Length: 252
Ligand code: ADP
Ligand code: MG
Ligand code: MG
Image (tube, rainbow, N blue to C red; front, side, top):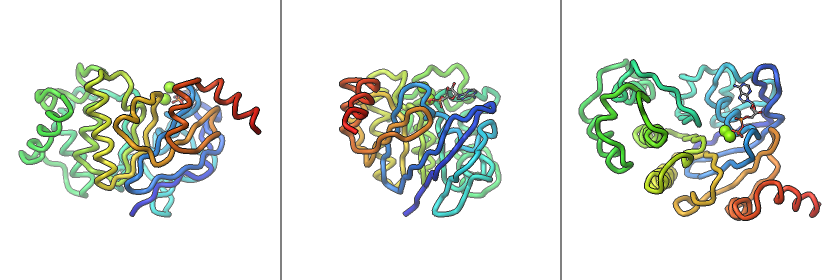
């Protein structure tokens, strides 16, 4: 059993404080959903968890199984089993996707870099077929000419292949066709069933067709303002953030 804890995290980007004290946690096997209007700080939180140096931690901590990882480099966090997929993934066209997959597995296992192993490739091909990704993606550069849907599917493929302690996905269901949403949704539930702790952001209740969230957090202006179950997602879909926030304010 593993636990990832964000404790009172304050993060600045370009000198501006974006996260103003965020506390949340994810344990093995959980599917935790983060929602919030555009610009509320969801992606900033994910970048801070990944260890992007542009995101300056002003206060608070990020703990993996009780140990702070806030001073670790991104690759050290990855090696410890935290996989973060980004909202706008970066293309690295000079590195073949097959090589990236092998490199990820080697880093995670603490091994030296090697050329792609045929068994790994075979497993990746199987996952690609399930996710609706063309087999030739493995010979292409990472993200080279990938469509938005291919990016998201490729990200989930990496997570499935690695089976990390924690999988953090930023809007994995955005920009996908109906089949893509189903494939990604099923992959997410498979990850949590196999013991990974999943933290994902989304804007849509349609994910509920495939995933059963353990907990839902809502962020607004750099703070967690609500915590509950999937009914929060349904309510947001129904009336929108603005009305929901007003309703809550009146109840207080
Ligand atoms: P969300 O993912 O919830 O839509 P973001 O974390 O992307 O929100 O953005 C939160 C706020 O932080 C926004 O006002 C955004 O403009 C700002 N921000 C995020 N990343 C950067 C960056 N790299 N440089 C400048 N401002 C940023
Ligand atoms: Mg956004
Ligand atoms: Mg975002």
